[in-house]
Amino acid sequence: MNITQEALEKTGLSNNQQNKFSLLLDKIRFLDPTYQHLIQDAYSFASYYHRGQTRHDGSPFIGHPIDSADILLTYFSDIIQKIDSPFPPYNKPQQNLAVAVSSTILHDTVEDTDAELDEVRESFGPSIGLLVYGMTKPKKEGTPERREQEYQKVFQYVVDLDPKEIAIRLSDVLQNSYTLFVHREDKMKRIAHHMQDNYLGIAYLVNPEAGKRLQENTTYFLKAA
Image (cartoon, rainbow, N blue to C red; front, top):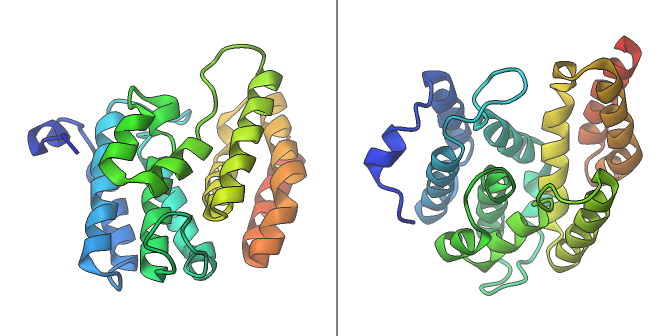
């Protein structure tokens, strides 16, 4: 990774965002230092490329992938460690988890910044490159419906190769379900229905607690609309 410390310091991250990541690090202290460093490198990469970006509520964008990674650790850590990697070395639970956390932190870099997928692959290897590819929707060309169809093909392709992608996507969706209030009423309802129709069933299958939380969040916003 060719991001210098000086460049990273210019990202202007608030203490709040840095504290969020520090809390995330506390949850993965049991990992081998090599894997902790991988996650830290993913954070540096994402922080650099998401610099200056904000969410709909005005908060720094980097908070979203950090929170998504925290959700992944909360609900999907155990199952992820049981999934073999499609790339060698295989059957290494700690590596599986570190790859999933790093991919979650990086999941919007290619879609929403100037970062290139090849750069992600070169910096973090084929496993993370594949998972980030599966989380990247096509650039804004064509109708939203066509883009969604194309994305679902890519997503399913990656899931077939590496089921960890499901946990990453569910973590992203669940994190977004907490912030539906930032959208206008019609869009809020449309997104909430989409989450329920497309992700609620699989969330309950993977972890009933995650499914329950997603149902509670989306139902709240549907009733509030």
